[in-house]
Every structure is written in C-alpha cells, then in structure tokens.
Image (tube, rainbow, N blue to C red; front, side, top):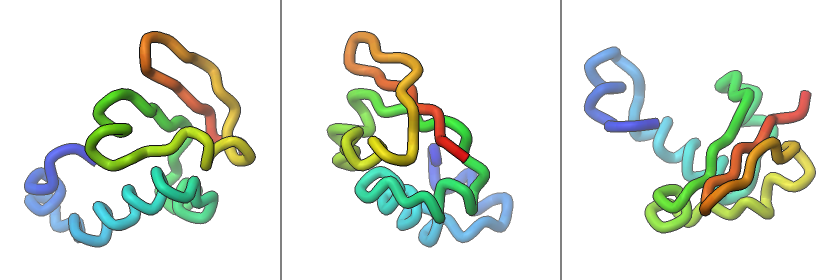
Length: 78
C-alpha cells in the first residue's frame, strides 16, 4: 500500500485500503486479492514484522515463485 497520505491525495479511502491490506496478509482473502487485481504478493521482513503477514494463509490461493533471504514472492492463482 505504501504511504497512506499518497493514497489520500488521489482521493482513495486509505483507511479502508489499510484494513483490506491487513486482511489480505492475515487471511489470504481470495475475494480481496481479486477485488484489487493483485497478481503477486511479496512477503518480506517488513510485512512480517509490521503487519504480521503469514505466508501460510496463502497456501491454497497462490503459488510460490521465489524464496530468498526472507522474501517470498507468491503468484495469485486465478
């Protein structure tokens, strides 16, 4: 999501977006992944420490394409 103020300057409801991002990383919500047209999910040290991202919640909705030095890149399945 990045800096919330950037979304706000473009008229995007950053509070709802932040809630959805947290939900995606904690539940692996297929509905939200498709709602935002997300094709790939990157989980690195920042996502793990700041938003408690859990790669295991994506096990049925993604395919891992990269895993190196604490970073996992996951491709969202259709």
